Length: 144
Image (tube, rainbow, N blue to C red):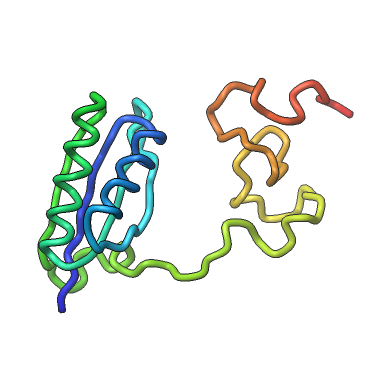
């Protein structure tokens, strides 16, 4: 059976997580991911599944987002042609959020593309790039 792709863009990460939860409970879909877009804190929810399930899930998610004044856009692409969206349609199974050596200290020569805080480079820091510096767990320890 050919898969279809659903995209739901909402305002805010918390609303995106709630919409993804409602969509997953409403229909048999695969959550491909959440992606922060540029500007205004918008987040895109990507889902896949059979056409009817994806349409049902997108309608549910859009209704939920609209009720919370956060709906930006919605789109269902039924049975996209081969090669149109090659990377999005393949969910990545068992991909760790952090590398195996996350417990090791970060040095200047390490690849830090997986680190979320660009101030302290600590993988345990909950601060995201662009958020206030006060959210960094090392905010008062500069230069030590």
